[in-house]
Image (cartoon, rainbow, N blue to C red):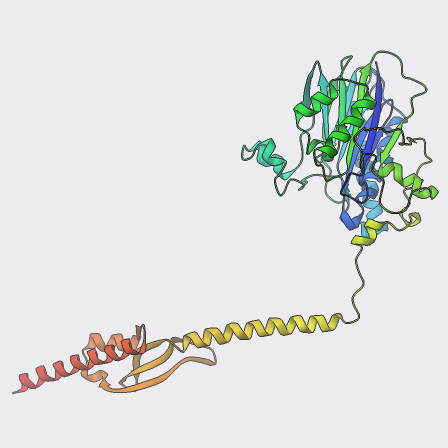
Length: 435
């Protein structure tokens, strides 16, 4: 058994640069989707492919146990992790970059050893049915697993791009590893989320059901863009066919991994990356120049030698403005002004409040709040009365000492009047008893 394969990567109709990278050869299929913005996701994905394609140099044989097959994949992914860590150490501006990865290593017999991290996907099309082989490491996938949203809702969820696991050179790498037993006639698809995010399983199966790997790859990318994908789109298709490996087969690099060697040779067009499908529907890829994977190790991946990249310039940190102190001063003034307005509003409200209390044994109407702050009195005497506490009952006198809250000045005066009446009644009672 051998693999008959094809690979297409397109920048899409929205993005300015392609941050996907892909590789496909007689023994290896791999797709990586870089993340990073200013931190250059294209560097992350192309660096990952540069490391992963080493698996092609010494493929395992059909007699190799599953553990050896998966061990090779895991080691390659960890080498990628270490390489990204070294890149960030050498170039701090790359801090925060990361990449997804789906890797399929063919043993030359009938097995594919898979490694997966992130939200790029692998599918198997067999006997007219499609099956998703990988499980997304995303926030929305956890919601799907919990039954809180559906697959359809996940495609439009505001946090659908939140990746929980990736190769970033910082966090511990824990890829999913598994083996797939191939059958003659099987068709395997590896793709970035630019395709899987807009094409459901039924549409993928419809496209994969006919035609050559070249046709399927082209149609998948075209259909993704027609469905409204706003991301880069990368699709790698491989068929399990009978026969010995084709000695004339050319391993292919696509996406950012293909652009890096062109940059190093000075042949990449200036401006945004071209889209193969922009403005037409035919899906003709005759203009696609395959990039042979036998590029000298490291060529095109040395960051200092790259020419300025428009997307990197767009997101690059800007030096502080000459008048940065002025903007900070203005911001401070705005903040102080807002606090002053808030304090003035609170003080104005407090001075519209009243309560009845005691001062020097006399009932007094206070204006403000029956409280105090260190160094700040929140109330003051507003009206004094001739009602004294020693002429009130113990109960009423106690209430006055504690402070009687009222709604308004009129309510306060009514409260004092009520206390005065009680005082007069108590005096009358006392006089009557004495006579």
